[in-house]
Length: 114
Length: 109
Image (spheres, rainbow over the protein chains, first blue to last red):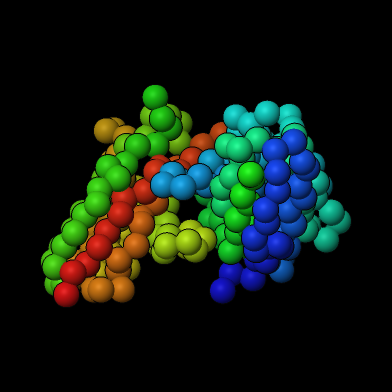
């Protein structure tokens, strides 16, 4: 196990609702990244947080937002949910922000939007 | 054009076979490279990092060709437990990891 935890494991929402997903990074890791993985696809980078600040963002609209807390845990918020937001949301942590660090993934939150 | 491209397969091979996966990436400034393994409905798990000199871990060998911008993974003596999706991952811009769509491998008894 990587020591990265996510909650909840599964979630069902309806279009237009808002959702908050949570992630606790591995002990000693201060960088958290979030990914969206649609069925049959590889994970797509949403954004990364380092020391409580956004440190890079992928091609996702502003209704995807996040936070990182002083203990390095993180939240992903998605507003105005759309059907296409149905996916596995993965959180990954790494020890510090520098190129080349491996990332360690949590088990993910499976979001279904009806 | 996608940042990372992989043949999605599926690859169906008998136990004991040798199988190779390739992956190409578009950004020549890419800095680091990895292979991850993902079992069905599970999270990706790091299989190995890929170094310019090539590296080996037991039955697994990874190679990087910067001139041609491709990465390979070779699995020798395939086991049933190797059945999974193998994800090629490239890091550039310091903080963004780009994943391929994954290559599906099934090892048949």
